[in-house]
Amino acid sequence: MGPGPACAIIEAIQQKNSQAIETLAEAIDWAATPIHPIVTDAEVFASYNIQLEKLRINAAGYCKAGPMRPPYNYMPEELKLAAEECGRRWALLCKNYQGNFRFKKEVWKVLRSSHPSH
Image (cartoon, rainbow, N blue to C red):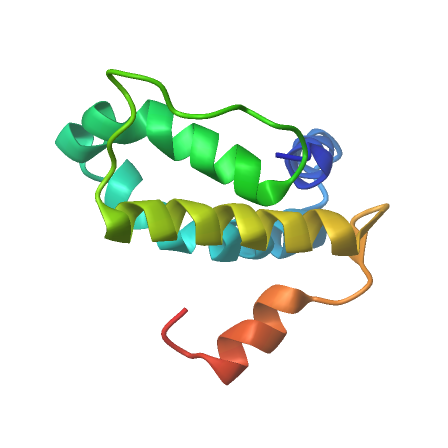
């Protein structure tokens, strides 16, 4: 997954830029929302963390993490879809991040307002 937003929030924290931290945290939280049920349940996360990361990375398009291989080649469909959605959202953040704590389009605000449950 592209490092832009993650590197930016680290830089914002180092600079103590509260507005940038708030914006980036909101954007990153939106991207990660689909996988919250996975990463907040220790048992589920322990069972599927390798599959989760391969699916997110592949869906984000930053690099090819390769296929899932045994014994880590099973993931329930709803978790698979959540991981892929997270990767797609991260790709949107990366595509819209312009540097200097700014985005071309604040996609998380646009998409949250059109789909309040996301």
